Length: 278
Image (spheres, rainbow, N blue to C red):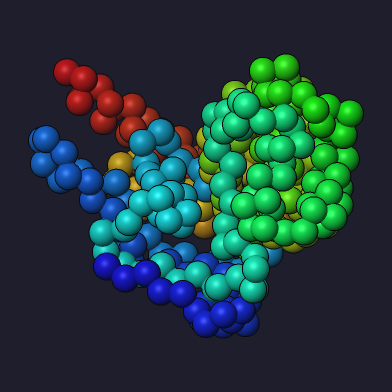
């Protein structure tokens, strides 16, 4: 097992590859024996790519994200990540659930990463003010998380992640708990902010619609053990209007095609769950 980083400020293997994963596997040791969560994952993700991952529950999507975040160690293979520029964090993660500090205000939550890095107060004020404005939270800057709706709390999480100016943004189903209206609004806000920054993003979702709406490239994963089933390039131009995009016939055709690849894996995952439960 190896994890390597390119020299400071340099790409992992070429001028435009931000993440290179080769032969990656992850095995968990359980009471009933080894459990293979990921098997032989191979990926090249260019800098600035909005990379989507879809797959059935239990296929190892979150495990892969946690490995990239440094929260899990892979069992074999290599993970090569281009080092960020000086004074910039390697990654920030936006979780599916509520990850805000409940004792901090909206402003304090959004500023957390910058303050931990010891940035000057004037810079923190400018950056946090910018991203609270971009996410429509300026007038709620002194609210606490319990005073906000679920959608607003996720907007704070997005503002905090972008304010920290990471090289890579890792997002684990950040909108899955929201109603459809708030989900579309947050997708639009995320796309607007991403257009400004062109961060490299790895985004996990169960929604094929969301994958096509947001992504440049989509990896469809198999049921357990998680492997790459197929890669799909999203051909739609940017910037994108979500509602206009979804009205196009070629959008529906692509969603249908991806679901065709995914359907058998979802059914296989259900069968695996039933067999484990019996």
